[in-house]
Image (cartoon, rainbow, N blue to C red; front, side):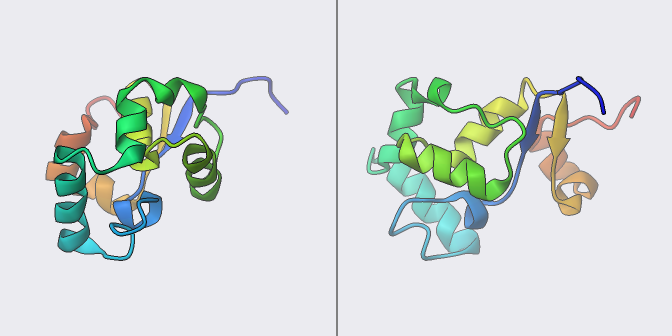
Length: 116
């Protein structure tokens, strides 16, 4: 056993993280478009909660997807964008393999393979 506890973050798709009732019913490009529209029109209370500083109320480190979704939903914070923000400071990212092998996704998330 070790006392080392790295700051870790789980990343995943909106399909796994979205808690907005009407957006979460969809998947893929349709879900992405609906999310963008809800954000742009300030119709997503979870995204608004995150933008208003509510993200500080949830620590996503060492949580799995289900725990993150539950904790964020309870605090009215968007789990998808909360994890994306936390990933910028994380020491350990837990990501689907396709995020790792897709150069566009890596670039969008700011993941570098250099010196890995």
